[in-house]
Image (cartoon, rainbow, N blue to C red; front, side):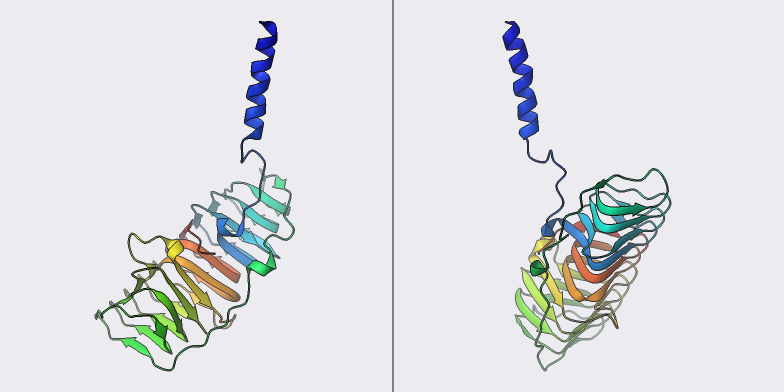
Length: 270
């Protein structure tokens, strides 16, 4: 009987030790909601509600009252006052006590082969929708400029699209009705209170927007209270998420800034 009393606790310990997730494992690419090839900055009161934040070769900085529920992965993590983080995978962490412990930083943070450059050949015809207008769903195709007027709705029927640039005026919406990919040669600009990405009920993993644009101007720029449901992938450009915006997906750039009060949730198409 005494032997059984010893064996049962031992078996229970072994079972718990063998459970997946017991070790401190760094995130995979699809786990990231925000990833900067060089740097990431979270402005005051921004929230990474789910998913990891990482810098492939640089620093992740959290301004005052910024919070990350999941992991942060970077060579250097800099924390200002009243910040909160989950796990940290890092070489060094800077800030006020108490500081999170650094778990071993993966090398590389993300395999460069998983972050290829973007190349897009746009079409020669503009797609321009006047203000306060809706149009029939647009089938797959290539366009030059895509301009959505103030308060207008453009629906993409799904599939593959290529464009030179996208500009959505205040209160406008550009929505994928089914799974779609959009290649953008230059830039994406969102006005205040705009929407871009998957329709309601279609998950963010079903929309991917690849942007070839560089640093000047930013490849992607959201304005106050803009909303994105999908992946923004701009490995050669700057990504700016607007103040008080709502972002579901994954947001990748050389340098990513999450605006004050913005909220980000993971749903990667990578």
